[in-house]
Image 1 (tube, one colour):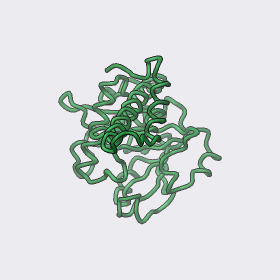
Image 2 (cartoon, rainbow, N blue to C red; image 1 turned 45 degrees about the vertical axis):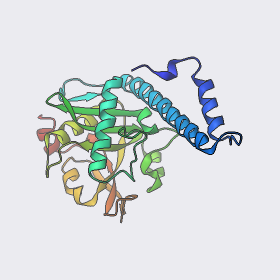
Image 3 (cartoon, rainbow, N blue to C red; image 1 turned 135 degrees about the vertical axis):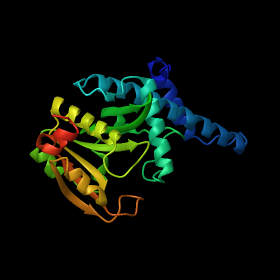
Image 4 (cartoon, one colour; image 1 turned 45 degrees about the horizontal axis):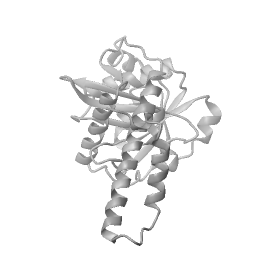
Length: 253
């Protein structure tokens, strides 16, 4: 895949796109104007995709990653990220979660938070079967701050983050292998990159499962999470307090 934003003219093209989308071309047929606006919107999304891929790869390459957990990987190529974005889209469509986490491009689920996230995936039969990301706190804030303030956590800890886009292709009850692999990946990032605490939105009925990991605390209870009309919780997770169960079953220590 060629990266459009490496082209020296990209800034001029983006300005052209923005200007034209906001301009009313009265001297042209309205149908043509609509078609042009659609084409320019597609172009903007393509540019955003290219920027997201490049910046996410760069961020992931800057992270410390312990390769001893062979079943999990950081996304370090455009091809890997595209497969991750496809899996997110496919699963969200399947579970009717598209309103809460819409595709930026039809069939590809990504957003601006990917640019400062550790994007982790695992494979089954040479196919990406699960993915999760750990967003590092930045000036953009964290996604769940629309539902819960993280001011207290920022005052108490040097670096916080948020776990999101926890996707498994084949979902079963209880602990499946993909979930184990992905949480090992999250632990890997935490331990090796000086994150102190991560927040996450989970279904209330999943709390018992996450409590088994150790270091889990309920920060806020919600009647719903955006467009998902079921009880949710905002939890904090500190892997330095990992339970014996987690170390034995997940890390095999």
